[in-house]
Length: 226
Image (cartoon, rainbow, N blue to C red; front, side, top):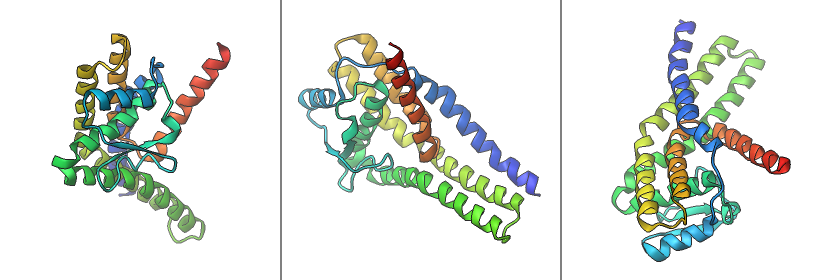
């Protein structure tokens, strides 16, 4: 019974990890720098398109993509970033903001799924470890419980991915239409990163933070070598 439950949990976890890595993370790992930084790109989008609502915030986290009024919350630390991976992630927040007026309920649902992906797995892990140490829960059942929380979180992230995919599609179209980047190759790179993020977002938030930190470390080591 325990082995069967572990198998059931492992299927969605394995599928999510494979999709996130093959279709998302690998593309972000190859992200290049753009000619303009995020602030410049946002300013050009606002000037050419107009219907762009965002604000910079010094205290934010990845799960808070837009505020209660539907305004995109852009992390201050990315204001001057030229990384196509960083810019793409913030543009998805902008895309969700653009959909807010017509699809508020769906976006709220997506954001709840994202927040659960940040909160549930770590809390479950701490609870399972504590319960196992004090002897309240057998180790195998602890694995089942932890696997169930991960599988459930990833399933909700998968089901709600269509909302983020639509936001990504909106921003990709806007980037193409407004021509905010000087070179076509940069535009294509940014659009690929925008879509890649919709696959990476299948993973719980803590895993995304770890993977993107690895990307940042790669970029720093590459700069040091150069």
